[in-house]
Length: 153
Image (cartoon, rainbow, N blue to C red):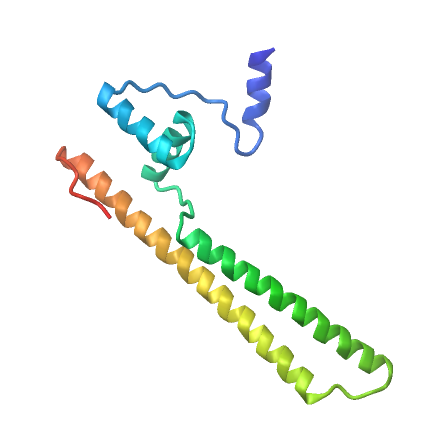
């Protein structure tokens, strides 16, 4: 039954049916446990994150996550304002009225704000991905050279 379940789970996205066994020293295990405590994660989740990070898998981490969340809230609020303006415009058109220039200007300004916030978010994500890629490249170079890794950011 478990073998059948594992074969089924492998077809699902984000399946974790594979097992990786790694031997580490006591000191390495203590460092992993300390990191797990700092991150408030289990040992397995911490090891998975470290492994995926070293393999170049992108994760949004603070402070970028907080900035992106703030930008998302701002875009959401602007979206509500855009909906209100468009609703008022539709009501005016249905009554046979002209759309006031002020409402058109407000709509243009809010759409510009959304574009600006999207650009900020994209910039944050690209910058973080580039930093992580550089960090991973440093790790790989240190591993290839068999040297102790230099202090990393």
